[in-house]
Image 1 (tube, rainbow, N blue to C red):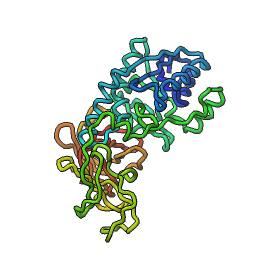
Image 2: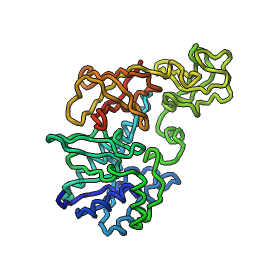
Image 3: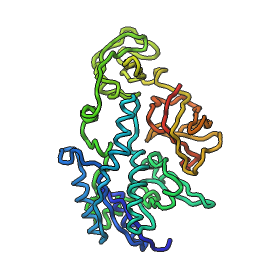
Image 4: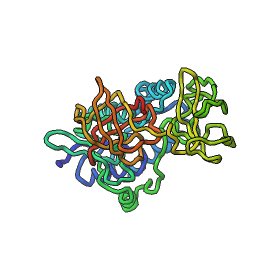
Length: 367
């Protein structure tokens, strides 16, 4: 590839640092941008934004590139956080990383980079882009343990045409080796986890500030009331910890649950403000053979043909064989060869044809 002006999103982490290094090595003119996406409680013990910027600036210094600090907090609040709260209020469990990529990193950031005269942008995501017959494809990252194509499935042809993912070609171990070899100050920095605006703070404590909580009954699969929930928004399907019924034993455990089997959140009845929990990981209420999704986004710009494909209904899940059928405007149905566990409304169902990520939609229901 001929040398180009590439703007790299430098997060302060090792992946984006090595991304910038590799591009510079390839002869590109590299400019770093640090994105600040959250500022409501920046001085708290939980928000690492200030530390991350110091790390990003130190990386830029070692690499000999410019770095600019850009504040996207207003965009983030409008486009990502407001939607995140709406989904939780409706009883669903959204994935803000998917929305952040579509709305901030590959929209607001991309627009800003283009204003700086960039020909391409780059991030430290573990994914790959391939051009084939004039169409851009999103491929899984080569390291199966780090692949992040799930979070990038809403990207468009126009966005992919402008995007580079250099570390998508490498295993994480090699990324860390390169970082250490060239003396990057963050070579051993731990990978960030969780949602950027929540950081390491307890999730329920954070949500409490923004969502009203109306307590209601917790019932089992036989309709018996066995506790009280603190508000349906604070629970997600498949949740095991923090249900608040510790020590409760099933009197005569039905359907595969033993006396000491753990309890899981299985259903949320928003109309009746009731939380249903079941005992045993493989309880039938936790398994689904089918799902429907809406709010679809396809990387090729159109839905795939009805076919045998594979899908993930959550990140870090093995691809599950399924049959895809388009349904109505902007929706689809999937039927799985094997039942899927805790399919959760609000999460993304992402479709794959081998290593090619096709796109996906937001899960609206399952059976």
